[in-house]
Image (cartoon, rainbow, N blue to C red; front, top):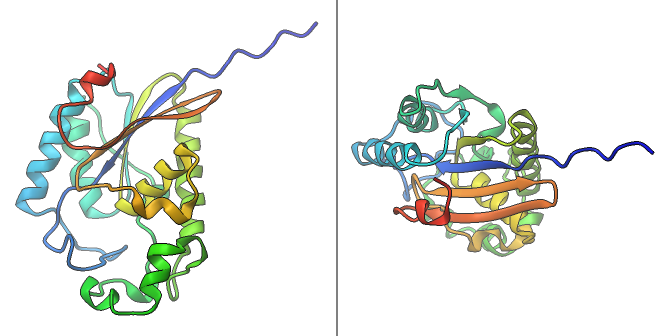
Length: 215
């Protein structure tokens, strides 16, 4: 009889949102270039690097191409003697015509209710749909997991893609993903194994990672 294939060794993915920027909470920067971390964001990135350095060995650090994610990933990688690698699959959602708009103005639009209550049916004007974004980020993480069996990797991305990835790992419908909070430089830990993902932490901003047995 043919032997059964060995079960896939689980891979731990640490999903890190980039640190605070001068426009965090005020505008929808999207994929616009030239937005860097604020002083507070750089301090957050250093704190995240310290927290991750206390965990088990990290095999690789990946980041979306935008400046704010690469600047967040740099100290995390340096703390492990690594160089952050750019992966376009970790990019922010393409907000199209809404890119750069003030959130206070977007909240007045009738479409804003759809964004919050029925995101699976919404496409940003001239941009990406939430469903496409979720498919993209989940596919990217699947690729990274296959590349690093049994290892720990860091993926520095953006709030909405991380929320969508966590929702998928939880088995939660995309229409409920807005209920997940992902703060600047928070860490969400997902263990991907042969029997499916397990969410070990979400929106972690303190020292609780070590208490979860990840170190």
